[in-house]
Length: 128
Image 1 (cartoon, one colour):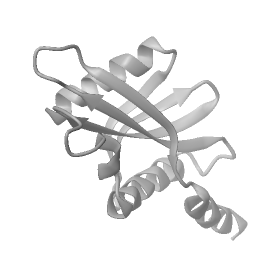
Image 2: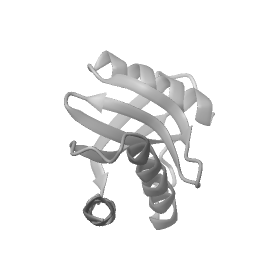
Image 3: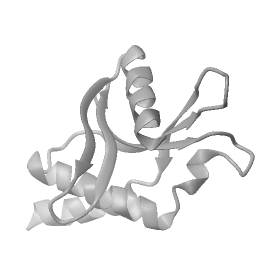
Image 4: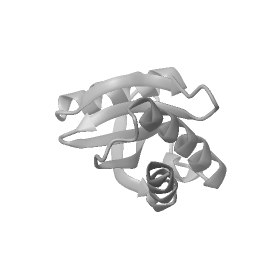
């Protein structure tokens, strides 16, 4: 179900003008990002959460502090590969609901959680 949700999310984002750069990125020192994409001039690290329903809450609520830390490590790894460029970037969450017998429902939560912590770490590394 998760892979199907990621495929639906990537296609949905693409139809809205996003350029998908990579799916299921795993950093060499840990960390992971479901979809790395460009939204205009912004680099986006997106987590995709898929559920059959929202009976137990919205899928995005599952992106807790531990999951955010995993995504931050993946984003840091990706930015390291690029040489820590001075570009705009953010963390998004894409919720995919797959109700039985109905069309998938996609909700895009832009800037879903804070980027300040990683920005400070990267700035400190650039200053060394």
